[in-house]
Length: 166
Image (cartoon, rainbow, N blue to C red; front, top):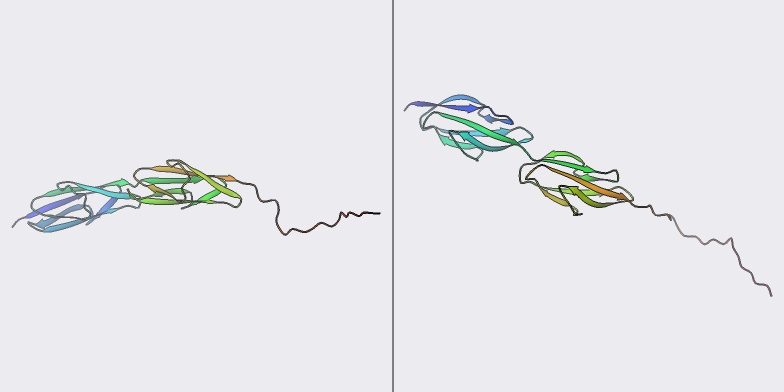
């Protein structure tokens, strides 16, 4: 039996195991290659001599092969809030795998109330559930409410007296 070469091409957004390069295998050898995405990337597919959406991918060396792994940036979630509250997770930028469901809870500051979501979400659900199938930008809107005026205990004011003379 003869030998064949496998060439794994480098890709933006990650690497592979074994690392990109050219390898020699005997005919009939079963090869397994794993895609290893960088932090904000996710695996999409293998193309070239092999097309697959499986990771890792396993195939038989029955000829020379050139494969390429394809990555994409994960959908980005941007969360914002005004000065009267925050959110959980806290306002900022996050990346989630496609299809991930993310819960966002509004957290009003003292004497404030949560009003609604805006941007790529509407309504006032608490928590809000967002499906990450694309980039999303969501803002939490809070409103200040007046602090209660009376604090402490009620006391009877006896400074005024009423007398009746006959």
